[in-house]
Image (cartoon, rainbow, N blue to C red; front, side, top):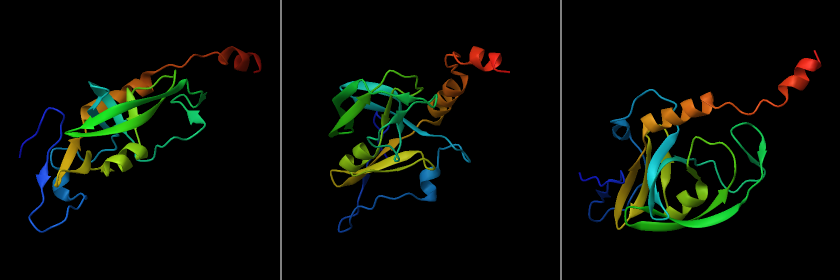
Length: 168
């Protein structure tokens, strides 16, 4: 089976069968199990290979946005960028925020639906139909764990601590 630099691997359908997007025990091969890692990939966005992209099938354009610090985040705007997976290109609207995140970008349901893809954090893969084949985007568990460490080590500004101490 061939794999290109983007981590995608095509699987051809047998003649006369339809493509089925699903996961099996075999799809877990090569992953560290058991785990609770986020699905983090490197993917081509706007013509650049972007690392630390979280695939979140629970995310859509939801307001208000809440950052990793638990505070509401005001969007600065929106930018539409092409996201390339193998030979397929999908235009995606990204909400731009000025807030801490261990992830460079988050791809959610709108991208998955536009691509016709399904994702699995357990199997650390995204599967999507492409040219009569099932292609895969492989997650990077080491990168996911680095992102988790960054989120844990991040220290938000402690502006309310002095007020709380004075109230004691």
